Length: 237
Ligand SMILES: Nc1nc2c(ncn2[C@@H]2O[C@H](COP(=O)(O)OP(=O)(O)OP(=O)(O)O)[C@@H](O)[C@H]2O)c(=O)[nH]1
Ligand SMILES: [Mg+2]
Image (cartoon, rainbow, N blue to C red; front, side, top):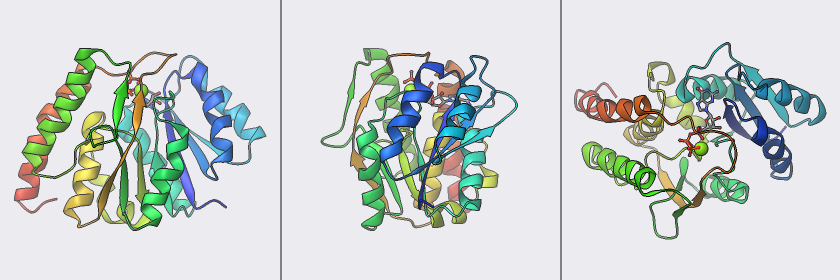
């Protein structure tokens, strides 16, 4: 069994799921697809591929419930399967598959949590319009200043956790669903004293399928960040 499990949440990724799963085949990882009953049939395609590819498992959830809950269910399954390293990755080719071994290497070299980072030297974003860039980099800056942490990319969704991090932070207390989920998990890891390292990546906008980004996801991050800080100041986090 592979030590590393890539959690791959999907909602309507019919065009991306098969090429993603096949391309992950030579990365030496297991892959856990977490599908929220995608109406476009992504879950059935994943199921067919899981029967063919021995490194693929699928977790079906009954309805679209946000990225955060999907990841939490995936983490629980990956830990139960004995994973030493647990990764987060989007199923839309925004994250370069060649960066998977780089994130794993960062943890093997001593990090507890490695973040694929667009906003450190060497990192970048390709094909995003001005508004998307502003929301993303502005969101990271906002969270960094309010939380007082030295992490440049707090909203990214390409990460590698050492098992111990997920066993230590209180996953059951996490209610965030969108970008806030990424901010909260990294902040909790920092608060618990874990070593967080940023690995520069180039993020490329998706070419097929639709974005699930919404105003609600941005709004959640805006109100959640100060609450996280207050919880930390009160010693509850
Ligand atoms: N299981 C599950 N997966 C989701 C949900 N929302 C988004 N995803 C998946 O999470 C990953 C990231 O979502 P995206 O829609 O790409 O969000 P994004 O990267 O912020 O937006 P784009 O850059 O526009 O693609 C993709 O693989 C989605 O299919 C959800 O509610 N449930
Ligand atoms: Mg995406």
